[in-house]
Length: 217
Length: 217
DNA sequence: TAAAATAATTAGACAAGACTAATTTTATAA
DNA sequence: TTATAAAATTAGTCTTGTCTAATTATTTTA
Ligand SMILES: [Mn+2]
Ligand SMILES: [Mn+2]
Ligand SMILES: [Mn+2]
Ligand SMILES: [Mn+2]
Image 1: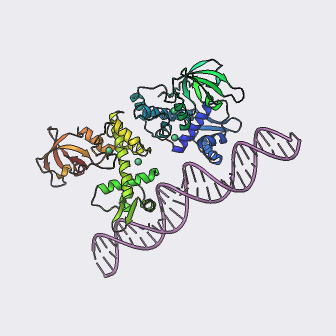
Image 2: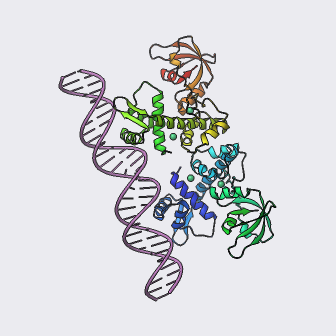
Image 3: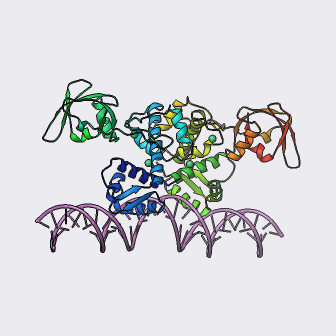
């Protein structure tokens, strides 16, 4: 199909497009991938030539229908492999992302669908992200964060936005996982810190950044 | 660990060393990988610098202890993934090699061992090749071929040497798989063709090349 | 053993994908 | 609206891994 780099760019652009509202600039892509903007400009040219993206200085980078289709398939593979690694091989949720980052590039026409079937057609990956269907349909992701709640509200953790080890390990320490119940007790006006109760236990204070990375039901 | 190319070279050199007796020359490696000898000479230099191989014009290319250890691990991953693809995802034995060729490069410290456990510590891959153990020990591969038999001998198919689709599909057509019983009825002196009986059925004639690629018990 | 064939090596090129440094555009602020 | 800062782009370099063509070594064969 495509090179490893092309696929990583496509997926990165897709993810940036998901967190919508923002214009997708070379700089934004560079930051997301940890690359230099100059390199990104090169790749934008290449993907534009291949008709996978369109670049307009005003609108920024956008996926074409073909680019979107391909990006979704890569995300599908990534999330299915994550389920496999966690459920079948016993990895923890903070270990699977990087391995899936490699596995997602294995290109075989029927691999994703077979894996999907083998796993029992899971709806969500271990981080709560929806797994795109074989037909390219993507279930709507969760979008309400902990910071969106009003004081006193109770919610269920549905997904995490940040899937990095440091964040997931922090969650583990706080005994928070997908499905955990959280009540927002108080918002500190000074820095928007959140005072919360996890699974009905005594209160804990977490940062605004923390709250923005917890998606709730 | 290493680049994809380095790993493919290591594995290729290992496999050539297994079919022992022959000196491993740049040309031999080039043929095995479908590369140009000039490219191979470059890589020989690189792997020599990394102390993974030693190259002596008289003795040809040899793996160092470190190179051997690494090569065996790649082969282990390859064969474990093949078992996974066949047993868990329902692929046929002629479809799995190329996918495993990519999967073998996924580098994670514990992945192979977890997969091994998940699969129930299989001894052989779907082509009858022994799966190296986690400690690096490699069970002795089968070495007697159909052509080594005497007229009248009966044997059990233990492994196949060639794992390409055309060969495996031919075997499928003849209804030969791992475990099939074959009796050598006659050797044609002209071209060493073999007249055989598969699972006790009526006789079939196969070529010398065919016979050399069937390993028996 | 000399000629011919084959193998190995060197030299030089190229594509992909990254970088740095310099320059040009565009946006922001005084 | 001009000066300043930030972003985008260009130009040139580098590494990896490949190639072709030319050259040098080594084997075969006559
Ligand atoms: Mn990736
Ligand atoms: Mn995930
Ligand atoms: Mn490979
Ligand atoms: Mn195999």
